[in-house]
Length: 209
Image 1 (spheres, rainbow, N blue to C red):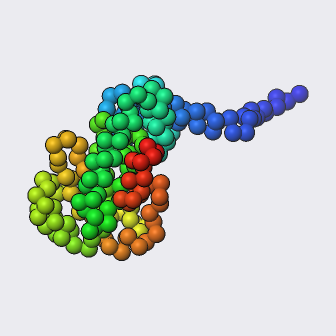
Image 2 (image 1 turned 45 degrees about the vertical axis):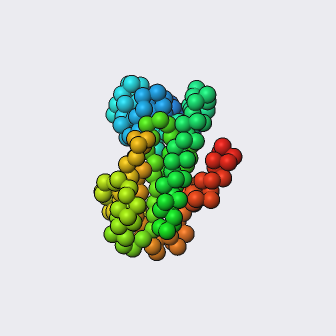
Image 3 (image 1 turned 30 degrees about the horizontal axis):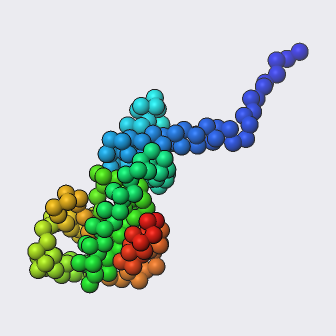
């Protein structure tokens, strides 16, 4: 009787389940590193987490969004006594900068908006103008100390390099201001959960959201 060939069948989805579990564990470990060690670079936190968990070569690293979600959960569980105050202070500073930049239609983005920010976090704003020099002259007129730079982002379907300014203040919390072209303001690409105008940030501070 000839020897048969046996095919080993894996339960459907079992491999994916293991991979998803690893992604989830890596997300939570990266979030813990960011919360406890003040790391703000997602890529560095994910690599460090993978190394600590014995999976330095894994191709299944979590997305930044997954890490941020885990970070919000971590702060709610383990930093609930002081994190709301830290987040509130960052949002107050963001709002002050937004009120100053009101002529350029500012929006708050990033970790200070989504609630995952901590003491080491920067503030990220976008403003809209076809003339970056107008923004620069406005800052000079109001005697705001700043540094000029660039910001790479996906905009209207392609990667673009945009001008940016980092506002410096006595609080030592940098406020990064990316200058988008004015037509991007009407592109419909902004979502309420990722972009908040002055009124929305005021509501966040009132409700503690």
